[in-house]
Length: 195
Ligand SMILES: [Zn+2]
Image (cartoon, rainbow, N blue to C red):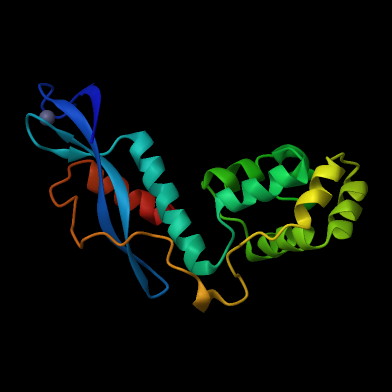
């Protein structure tokens, strides 16, 4: 619970406190409880969601979908890219996807395609493939750092056998946190649909 020091826009008397609670979501037949963020007014008690919370919720949903799809997480992509010794912008020049693609993948705003996911894995597994692609794109990277890291094992999600994916989410007690939510429910639903 975090005090936001914001006036409630509904009653304009109370102040908002941020909370996160388990909401049951489903994707491809898998159901999880994920923590979605919302605010509660200490005066009128209304639950509501602001833009920042909607964005956080959208990212939580996207991460859940990536887990089910067996795609690399945003953190895994950031870790691999950092080990490549290359910027987000330059990596997009090498692998495609557009100038802001890796920023979006890493923040969790957009999911990489299955083919991009495989391409990233191939580059990590086969340094010569990555080296060849960077030369084709005319991009520099930190080669010694990269060669040092590819020799070390890195536990990645297994795209090739999604059934074996570990459940990375803590399953919280089954509860519905947004039953009376004025803006929150709407925003959360929009966020989930948009994710
Ligand atoms: Zn209020």
